[in-house]
Image 1 (cartoon, rainbow over the protein chains, first blue to last red):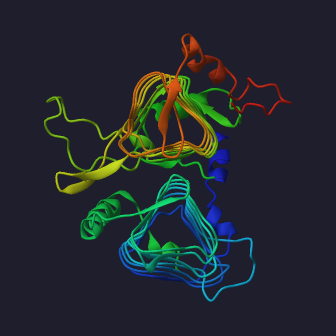
Image 2 (image 1 turned 120 degrees about the vertical axis):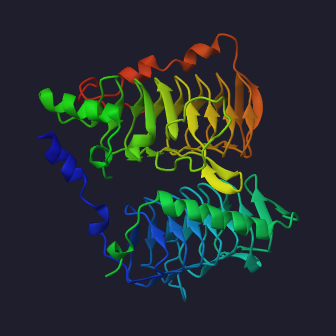
Length: 198
Length: 225
């Protein structure tokens, strides 16, 4: 009796949403509980890690994720924005991007440059561009980036809107650390990419 | 939305106990699974890697709370007090803790001895974690109140009797002394818990408000705050 109720709750939620056409590298790690939905293509490049309960939604435009990104749990990428006009693409994450727990990235030509860190619970508005060359910005927890906002390279956004420039020059180290982290994640997160492929 | 607990193998012993207990007793299809030690875990809670999660007892985990037990330590901690090789538990939760809807507990991770590893997250007794809060601390003491939408950064250490107000962002590696009130973005100590104020941290009453049979049928008002 109890097992019947439990089994019911085991129904994969992903099944209810339309599967998105995906283009996944074979070295991608995606937890089974993540959801890839929408009708545009979702591209994920090699060695990217996607944690459980993520939602990548391409129904408002293409979603592209670069190499060695880490997307933590409960992140929504490609969330609908207030402005319903469709962009050329949905969301682009370049290489080495980290998106922490429960962040939301709206869809509509949103570009997150290489090495950016999007903190816990942040919200990135549609069409925002992080970095002049779109690189290495740090968005601390619970920050909000307005739609269309552009941030120069190495910007640190903290305290709900204050900015400064990251002059530490630790980009290479950070990228190395990210690679190490991905190695570990590979061991910890069970993955079955075929589940997401059609 | 999925309930993973009883299907992961190996199941943590408390869960195994619970399953036997549930099947022996007349089945009540409540929202919560209640264990021998009095833990109340919502069926809609999202526990990942249950075998690495330790619950002290009388702990409430509400729906959609997420606990990442699967992020375990991957570098063995040599030289930490020469004790027997530690089990790979990644999250320790004490007694009378209350994890509200939508909160998220995950162990902090860092580079240690040249390799990346997650470190265990330890939570004391009578700890309240508000809705949609994210806790990535190293240690949370006892009698700590973390209000809704707060973020506790990686490797933060929160001592006993601390109140973290709503929307606070506690930066990584911050150490919060006992009896502090913390708020802001980034979080700062803005005051002290007044004398005698520590009684408000008691979670026993709140524990009683949640469960399968306890709340009156009309009142969905189990939510704290």
